Amino acid sequence: MIFFGPKKREPCVLVADDDIVVRSVIGNVIETEGYRILEAGSGQEAVEMARKEQPLLIVMDINMPGMDGIEATAALRADPKTAQIPILVCSAHGTFDNVEKCLTLGARDFLMKPFDSAVLLKKVRDIIAKAQKPQ
Image (cartoon, rainbow, N blue to C red; front, top):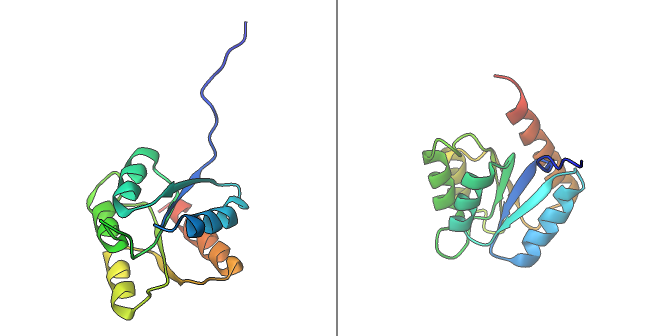
């Protein structure tokens, strides 16, 4: 008799960006760390996926159609199911106001596009390590 238990799923990182190429690039870089990548094309989709999948980290673009990254960050922080998931804001529109709004809402860090892959990986590693430390 063969028993098939639940599939072991590696921890995931959610990448939310309306540009499929950017999602793919960010995802490919983070996958090198062994994480499963989830992709969302809008803030609303990111919120729904985060509630369902409980990723270790969300990499969030600011400017997306419909619910943008600022609104999505606020929605994630307001929901007890997702309030503690770390968010790394990654945007080409890194005005001081946008960055400040995201950090005030609870994003852990900000990365300006275009970014260096090594810097992205360092931020991802640091944020996940801090989030996994016992409080």
